[in-house]
Length: 167
Image (cartoon, rainbow, N blue to C red; front, side, top):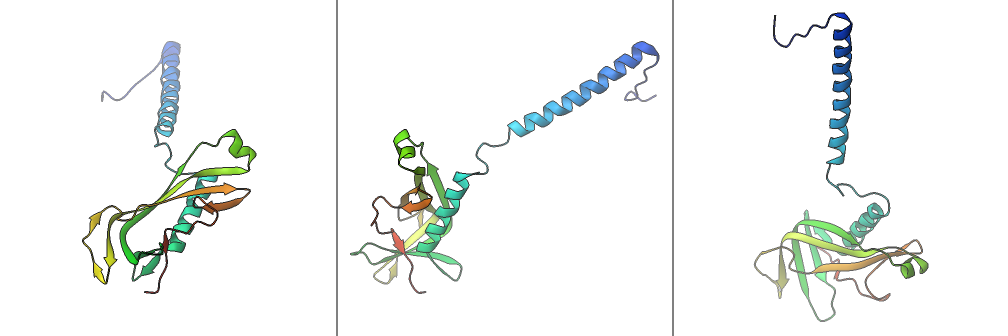
């Protein structure tokens, strides 16, 4: 008889069999609940953070130019004439805790949004510079949702850091 085969006979053995079966069910439930609790925190955003992420993506996409699958941004400062090329881009949000005054002023979400890339380079005077690790341009903007409206930048009349251009 194989060693994995169990046989329970008589009233005492029926109790043992029942206890084994209950133990298996309880153990399976424990393993399942542990698996749920061990999933990475923040793996998916929900609620207002998910909305903030979507708004941040729309904001950065409105400032960037896509030519042939490559992402570019033109510097939006008045005295600067530079174009940046970005590869393997990402857009992240960093929420901050709202104060009581924020809430009383209608602020529903506040934080920063960062546009980053694995590598980048800059075009100055018609010549491309060398590739660099990370984003050559620090692309971080304050963002807030106030009275159901999303706002970007520090001042109401703030210029976006980048702008689109024709390919």
